[in-house]
Amino acid sequence: MARMTLGILAVRHRTAPDCFLSGGLTQVKAARPVIGHDLFPMNKPTLLSSDRAQSVAISRMTEAPNAAIVSQTVLQTPELRVVLFSFADGQELTSHTSSRRALVQVLVGSCEFLFDGIWHDVAAGELIHLPPGHPHAVRASRGPFSMILTLGSEAASKGGP
Image 1 (cartoon, rainbow, N blue to C red):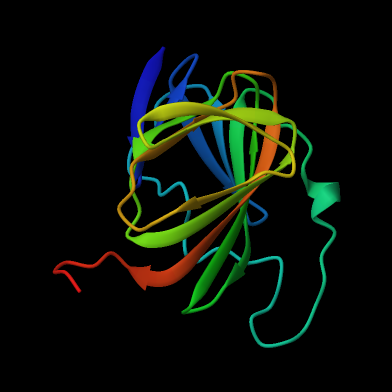
Image 2: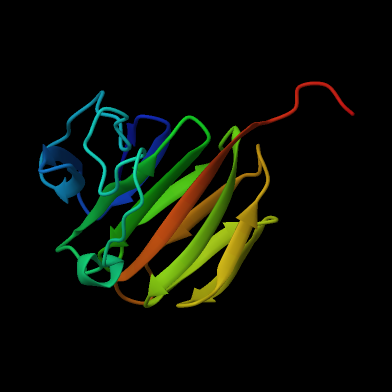
């Protein structure tokens, strides 16, 4: 299995990944290596505008990709970031941390999610809370799945209370 660092995350694929940016989606696809692309580009268009009330049918966007991880930013504001991920079977984001508080909700399918040093089985409808700086990883070992990642603006504390 090839492993390549893209932005802040390492993505493990059956072969080396290629990263394509198209129509506001980031797709990591089995092909030749590409280095230096951010898996979550900040300048892509979002599904929802940050300055007006709207709705979006997320359920229509959770189709499993073919041998890839696809991400789409749903909403981006200074205080909040919401990203939809769809994983093909066998794809993995290896262990990493975030400086921001995170909530993850599996929408379709199930996955294995590493937190507190243990791999947990997580199914559609379950919610995971990750404090800032908490190591975690996710893998699609039980078939394709989709999840929503919500990142708050809270940064990890450098001192103490």
